[in-house]
Amino acid sequence: MTSHAAPRIAFARSAEQIYLHVGGQATHRVALVADALTQELLARVVDRPAVILDLSGARFLDSTFAGWLLRLRNQLRRIDGQLVLTGTGDGGAGALQTMGLAELFHCREITPPPRLQAVPCPEEEIDVPTIEFMLHAHEELAAESPANAGAFEAIAAQLRRELARRTPCAPPPPNDPQV
Image 1 (tube, rainbow, N blue to C red):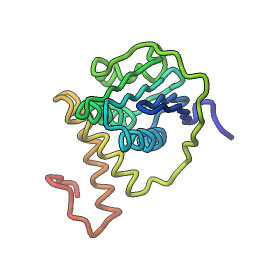
Image 2 (cartoon, rainbow, N blue to C red; image 1 turned 120 degrees about the vertical axis):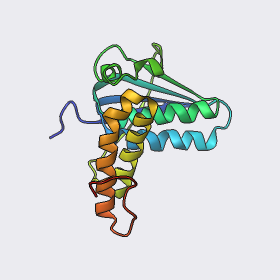
Image 3 (cartoon, rainbow, N blue to C red; image 1 turned 45 degrees about the horizontal axis):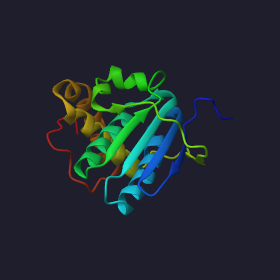
Image 4 (cartoon, rainbow, N blue to C red; image 1 turned 45 degrees about the vertical axis):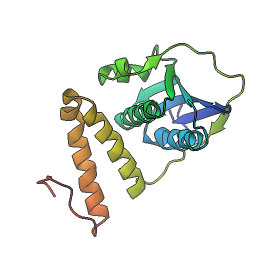
């Protein structure tokens, strides 16, 4: 049975931009799908790509999604691209404020395209690539400010330990006494 808060994503794209609508829970599952869609855009658009992220349907936004969003913003800035958040009045977008990130993003109301294509956000096993994705998202959050470092470095350290546990041939995480 699917909950009304289950992760959902739909998109529309043009030559230079992608519009992503997030519904339900904006978690690592949605971030993984959204990342694949945006990276495909960035691989083919070299001149001022735009990503519009509609959070009007997001009921919850977790730290992995927020870290991915921050990483995307930074990536787009490096190539003179643009990230615009829309539908940030309620729901999960309030989590950005709670995490001290809201002021880092350009927000404005944008009318959604007439047709959006739904993309599944499958339930997946938390495998090594997923843990690495989550780790990079939390490292991005921790690096944003000293206040964030305190909050998110502990999560990043836990994810590093989990990676080390799952990949026994990998070197231990640096400066992590709990390994």
